[in-house]
Every structure is written in structure tokens, then in C-alpha cells.
Image 1 (tube, rainbow, N blue to C red):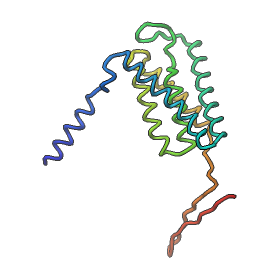
Image 2 (cartoon, rainbow, N blue to C red; image 1 turned 45 degrees about the horizontal axis):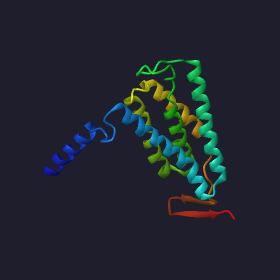
Image 3 (cartoon, one colour; image 1 turned 90 degrees about the horizontal axis):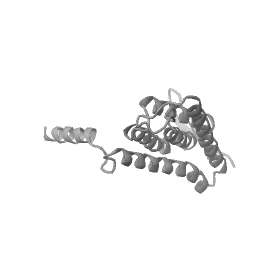
Image 4 (cartoon, helix red, strand yellow; image 1 turned 90 degrees about the vertical axis):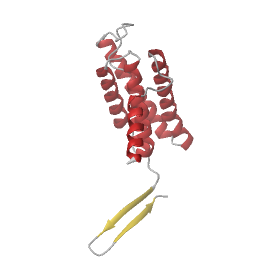
Length: 180
């Protein structure tokens, strides 16, 4: 019984805790901006490190398209920010670019790279709400723009190796194909 109590206490503390560095609006803003910058750097840097220049180009196209659509909508729909600082709330640019980077990474390199990137992008969205820079619907719209550009403008990275599982009522196996 004791492990269940400890587990419940840990889950409860995680559910109610704020990040130590993000106890006020400015800290949330700074943290979200840093994570956004890191996502952009990884979405452009990972393909470059892998020598995947097509992936680098697709990441740049995805990020550019998300930014273009986002800033076009900001000019079209001048929504006041929750903190009252200006009328460029809708949609969230930080969120759209973060989700574009995450969707590009996921679509190009798979869920193993994409899942952590998507979680980081989600943090960026939450940070924009907590910093009072955006309403929840600004963040949802930004996420939709980013995901759409990332998935529409990015193709799966082809390593040249394909594994095809097969089976029938008597046996199972796999065939590996490699393109030279």
C-alpha cells in the first residue's frame, strides 16, 4: 500500500507545481522564448548535422510558412493581448513556429524525435498563456498553423533501408531492402 501513497503524492505534487524558474509572467515569457529558439535551432541543426540538406530546406520552408501565415493573420485580426500590451495576440507566433519545428522533426525523423519536440512546443504554448501574452484560442490557432505547415511541407527522411514484415498461417518473417 505504501508505494501507492508515495506515487499519489508525487503525482499530486507534479500536477500542482510550477517550474521553479517560471513563477511570474516574465519568467514564463523568457522560458517559452528560450524553448522556441531551441526548437528552431534543432529543426534546422539536426538535418545539417546529418547532412540532410533537403530536410534543412523543408524545415526552413515550414518555419517560414508558419511565420508568414501567422503574421498575416495578426494584421488581419488585431486582437488585444491579455496583458493589454498591443493588438497582435491572434494567433500565437511563438506557438506556431514551435509547432512547425516540432511537426517537421516528427514528420521527417519519426516519433522518437517528434514526441519530445511536440512536448517542448506544448510547453511554449502554455508559457504564452501563463505570461498573459495570449488567450488559449490564440495558442490553439498557432499550434494548428504550425502542425499544418510542418506536416504539409515536410517529407519522411528516406534512409534507403526498408524492413517489411510478413506472415501467413504457418510462418512469419521480415524482408530487408536496401537501396544503393
